[in-house]
Length: 99
Image (tube, rainbow, N blue to C red; front, side):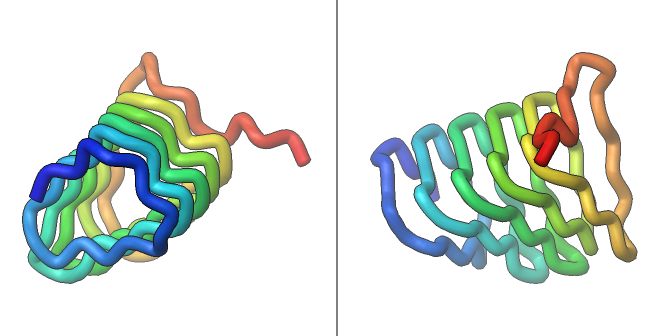
């Protein structure tokens, strides 16, 4: 699945997905699925166990990681890493929300 159109919805990823647009809502990546985010998620990103996410764009909320995560872009909120593995590029920006 490739999303190139902006959507105002909470999105559930249950396959391989690439987001090139703005998702106004939360995104959940379910078990055995993968996400490549080049666009923006305006709320939170949840990565379940057994799933993978690659953030090249921006997540304006928090990321809860129970799977595999690589961040190359920006996360405005916090990275909550429960049981997952995370790689954060030196050029990535995480936790820029000062509130």
